[in-house]
Image 1 (cartoon, rainbow, N blue to C red):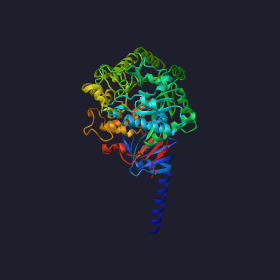
Image 2 (cartoon, rainbow, N blue to C red; image 1 turned 30 degrees about the horizontal axis):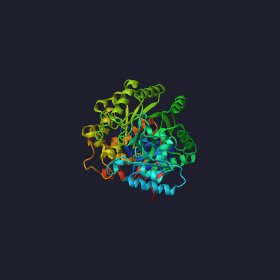
Image 3 (cartoon, one colour; image 1 turned 90 degrees about the vertical axis):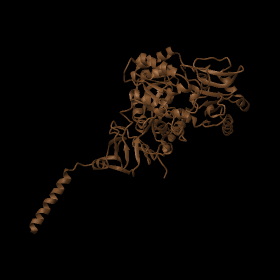
Image 4 (tube, rainbow, N blue to C red; image 1 turned 135 degrees about the vertical axis):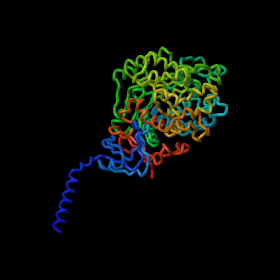
Length: 552
């Protein structure tokens, strides 16, 4: 009996050894995250528990058992039930401009002209050596009477120092007499695509759209040191709200070259899709260079301005403004100039992305796109904002494969006064996100910061609830055009990546893609909509590197 037991034990030992010898060795990776709710945003919108990262890319995603049985890591992180999403992508920003704005007078939220003046005085006293006083963010729609301001008080306070204060949307500015003098602007100044406001034969100091350039062109250039600081400050703030990629709309070569220098020294980590300004110099250079893309930077598009903004009545409308029947807004260039640009973009294989707010601008550019694109295509030309679209023009997005790139918070910021501008019927055809999505199954979501706030969860909330920061109105604003949570998440991840020709690099958690992640203690896919704006980011990860970690 003892011999039999020994015999059996011997064979059991052999079987155990054989079993271990047959097991495949585990693959070594850099990091494993497990124990979470991982929204992959892959084509099936699968939800996983764990993922593995090596050399800045996802190696695998699956269940806890799947990952632990096949991989071992230098670092293993227990998510403890946290939610994981692909890195958030803002499909339309002014990232560099936002950074520059961090070092000027902050006028956002000023509830009166008197408050604006007080903020300017405080800034001027704290920065006496500044040659110019620059500010941004005022919005007369927040003031009693909603009238544009006047320069008289600025002239009294700063007779010898130029002042330029940009409206929240960047499509209007208040300047003082010194700045007008430097720009050579008088009451008789006329120009295409812009206006100089005049009352009783005297300039008010308010400039709209192209008129602003007459002064901004005279502002001393930003130094490289200042520009670097602006980008790093902007990057830090964006990481804190979960952004890993931004589309920076309207850049010159000098700024893009600085991006490359900062990527080379590893100081800049934010991934950027650059929309280039369509100046002759920029077009000559980038058409010769051709399309460029690496893991950090894509250059293959130009940002065109079709018209101005609704808030400053520069948006080009098919019929007059309801609250100012003598105005219809204006295009910022002639239609034939837009067509010439479109033909050049098409010939060179570059994406054309055009700012269109009013229904006239949307119609004009969609018809020009149609003339050049000639039907279905994969060129992914975009209409930026697509804010007011006549019902007769909506189908053109699908017919010519045009991507609507919209900003959900524009709807909830404008809803207080937009009907005054458009009237009760035309407002129904504004901010029609769901209707635009249904045309071609793609919609890219952004913020347009610094016009709006940088936090992508504000846009997520506005898209799914159609309410403001106070969760007003109770029933939501034009809720027939709200998005589902899945659609909103796709709009700020995989669809935004697709709109940038980057869907093979990012936008979902899939093997082979860049390991860009957002981790949250709450789950935006199930959390009460009233709480969405205030949910904190736990960690932001780019290429496997933690670039932001919530303080404990």
